[in-house]
Length: 492
Image (cartoon, rainbow, N blue to C red; front, side, top):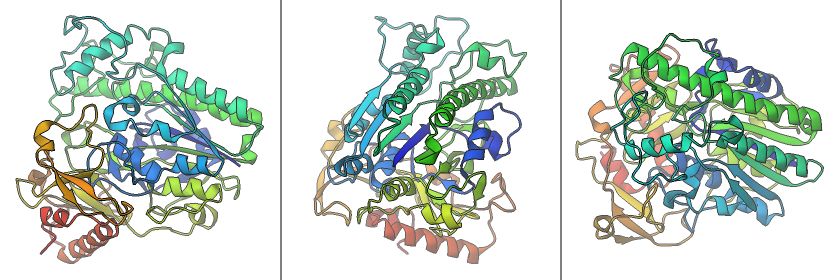
């Protein structure tokens, strides 16, 4: 048995043809849907990038205990478990966060791995002193990511030919692995591209698919901020995202061609997924993380072909989450999940349309704690402006691209184990950068009557009580720190 997981970053469900979008050109995603089960109710869990990938390894939620960080010594790792069962796991990726302080323990869990440089602000090619905002064709970028923006301008100068683009190289490497091992058994490939994550950089042939009269400076990388741009600039950012999405579709098609040519459908599982979505002006915001976790961010696309059941060109409405994917992969290889994995194998849902969960938990560390039952979405905000108490529990004190700061280290206390830390005590640190989600207040939505989440329910205490009880139950199942209940005002 063999399995391939093609993972995109920030792949928006609402812009894919098989999910009903007619404004984009994604024929290979439509072709994919014809070969697979399309899941209608897939939700993210721990956000954003590396917390989501930690779920893909561990099969459990993590955002209640810490923010972005490495895999922990007590964490289970799906690809490592495969390797321990003589199933070769390989990672081909251009996702730069794997090679930063906050992701440096992930790629080494695979049997073999390879990476490709140049995405986003990857510190790849060097120009001493940087280039600043000297190019009149660029929108000055003075937000939280200015240094990344400047580095990205340098990187792009080395990516003039598409064949050298990190996405192209990643797919080429993944297909090389498939070709090399197509007639071998017992392997798992994670072919993972950073695209269509911002910046929305692609090539003219993809931009030409979306004609535009826009004549302003380049705008393909919105800041993580409320929308202040003009309608033309918003449209240009979307056009850039659409172009990059069509580029992703093109390379997905190459893998589907390979599945056809090598007849891999007979014995190879195929999963196509993402970590989360991205706001492109909806609700007045760009990006993710700091605002309420609207469906544009957390309601994600998912496609699965499982050759054991032969189900294709069908949909499933049962609720599923990211934490279910590693358990599903282990199940495919006849491996039992570990006791600490909270995810459920999706085999019953694929084979017999039998639901595997009633509710799902999702959120960002220090922000909203949310749950959904597939119809209602409940977002619980911090009870006070201070957003306290809030702690990080870890044995690996690293953030995205730096180690913990001295001021954080000075707050360290020894904490007792949680149920999933395998009797290991932990370090507990005061969080230095809590979210400001309190200002939005609690939110409750009915997706049946308000799918765009424009009208929060404010006059149904019985419904709110029901969803609050679901949220509390999910937090308890996750062995949430006691202070998380206090932070959210749920200890009452």
